[in-house]
Length: 499
Ligand code: NAI
Ligand code: MG
Image (spheres, rainbow, N blue to C red):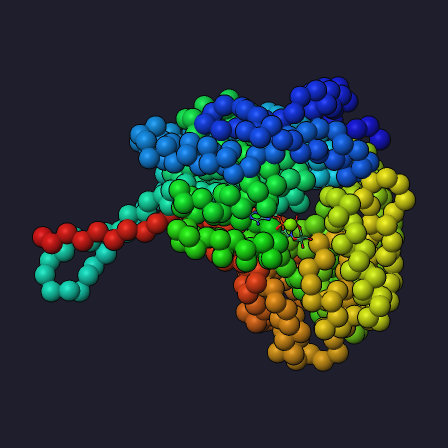
């Protein structure tokens, strides 16, 4: 099979990355970190360091925030008409597509995901985020209202941009996550300081180049690569930041909530999950099996909404578990650059150790490793796709987010929807849920009973810019995407005129 990209683009990219460290993007200029410090970037498929980026710290964050503040407070951005903001966003979407191969290759080298997934998730996903949100720039508006207070009134609301946004993103889908935060913020008229994950900073630097090329005014979008404990924490702490939009772990999400109390900045959080997949006895199991396998092994399970708890009716349990296990055993692991690869490595050695630690703890608590369970051979951070059976609530592998290719399978016997929902809802998380049944009433009843921000019935839908995404319970605060997502970057103002 031929590579789905041009080998010369890859060669050129490798040479560029090996030569000079990538820089911070502050106030429209590329510059080194004030400290001169660098982060080594590792290819998780080989364990080799192949690039370096600037390790921004508090001083760099301060410069970036001040640039974003000046851009927000000055006329160059706030005076820009919504349609002009939309045009810039559409231009950036086109540039992302035009540079799609380089972006996707960077994402594969940096994160490990298969190239085709990078093209689909990073490039197409990001372009669509910008196009969808560009539409909101011209449509966000207040309402006219009818107060009942004595008198005659003209009353209305205004939707105004919240201000300077600090966006902090993780390493599992680096490029599309970065763009998903920037796009609604720009549509609302905000300015942004983005802090990419230290494990996967490289595609954000390409984003910075394309932002400069698209012609956004200086300071509207600033990108500071660096570690979470230094750059990330400084951004959350900064008094001139009006809102933090964070995606990552629940533990860091809680730290952010505490740190944001200084100036009571707004906080939205898209955190972890332990999402249930419920397969009823009447389900189309031939469709449910590959979908459930993809739902936990896609991107090596490093997906916030991964379907990591499987509940199957006993009448089809054996067939489903055997089907998913067969799929797990046959998945081809390898470098995301190989066209035959179906699952790449985990992002880091740390993440591999974490995931193997969970698998061992499951075995210690009495789970059976049906398939997988080991690190794969070689230098990269590969873990075999794993199915654990004999799992039950209370076990660590069932309670905690593993963020790897590990499925916990459980069975249910009765047809009492309340009991099944109670099992599915027995989690500190509430991000997503999948339901497989041919009974339309069961499907919608379960959709109502499950406590999760996203419900998928019979395979419905991935992440779509039009569909709100976010968590109940400890899966987060607020929603991203859709109208709710862009409104989270605004303040609502009531105006009353006595006539
Ligand atoms: P993390 O939550 O530490 O990292 C996410 C982002 O937050 C990164 O950009 C990081 O630099 C930043 N960050 C870290 N500490 C910070 C702080 N004190 N202040 C401000 N920013 C900070 O996630 P990590 O450690 O990479 O992964 C650990 C676990 O988190 C994973 O195993 C997984 O369970 C979960 N996770 C969930 C994600 C999701 O999409 N819901 C994404 C990534 C991780
Ligand atoms: Mg961390």
